[in-house]
Amino acid sequence: MSTQQPTARLFTAVYEGDEDAVVRLLRSGTSPESLDEDGQSALYLAAVSDRPGVVRLLLATGADPDRLSAGSDSPLCGAACGGHADVVRALLAAGAGPDREEAFGFRALTWAVQRGKAAIVAQLLAAGADPDLPGPTGEPPLVAAARRGSPGCVRALLEHGAQGRPEALAEAQRRLTLDVEAELRAGLERAHGSGHETVTRRFAEDGGVTIEVELRVGAEAFAAADQQTGHAAIATLLETSLGITTPPEELAARALRCADPDQDDWKEAVAVLGRRRDRETLRAMRDWCGSGDALRRAFGEAVRGYGRRA
Image (tube, rainbow, N blue to C red; front, side, top):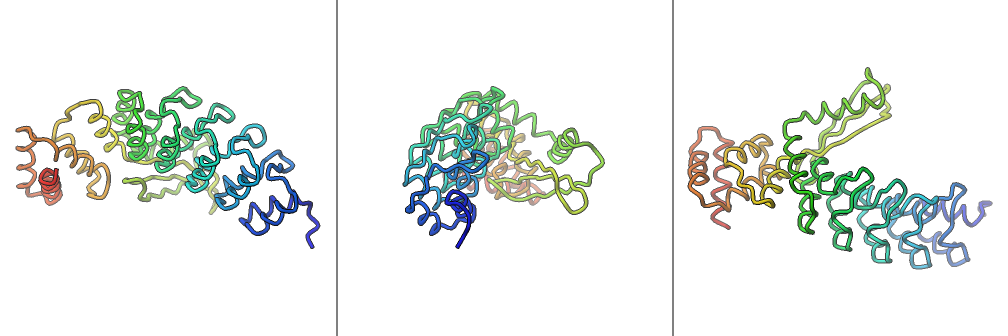
């Protein structure tokens, strides 16, 4: 028999994702609005721990989806920051306000955009989140998404009429020429001092590559930063939305820089050029298809094939 009090047992069960124990405790009268000694709510812990089943149990028995944990932290914001799609869905279905503001002016959309969680951004916007509410720095979500380098976030925001397109385009174009790894390392060193060992990782995400840099002491990482790199695709998306006709060779250069037909930098350039029928684009396409460079030739054939399907 556990000697813990019911509230403590509830938090242990929430943390461990033990839904049966949660059900027993709630049925025995433990409040779904229980708080721990720090004022953290059981619902917030379940949300940030990605426990959708537990979240649904707490909500079904009366937990307020909009109640701030410890007076500052929104369950929806915690779930959005972590990219926990099932938890976000459960909270929204229970009536959580998609624009609910937590401490320091953050909202769920702010977190999702900053972390490049495109699926969460789409969920929040579909639930009625305002695509133009700024984050704590006053920056429009579209500009933040362009800085993050997430084509998926940018697409979702554009589909919901987000404003700030010229500013977002300028941000994407500026980042086309930056060394992302060097920028991340410099930012970490400004915050934590220089001379630390660094480890860099690259992984596929959201139609592109995400770069993560860690600072380490021995084998232990103590600080990290990451950045998506879909800025070429974002620039192309924003130019299209603004009615800007980008020269064919510039679009080709964006695609060839990533050199990967599975990445959005390539796909967006192919789609834009494949829809065009002007003489300059058709001439460029013929040149690419006849190139002695295999990658340029593949790009030209991709444009030609898209045009036939369009």
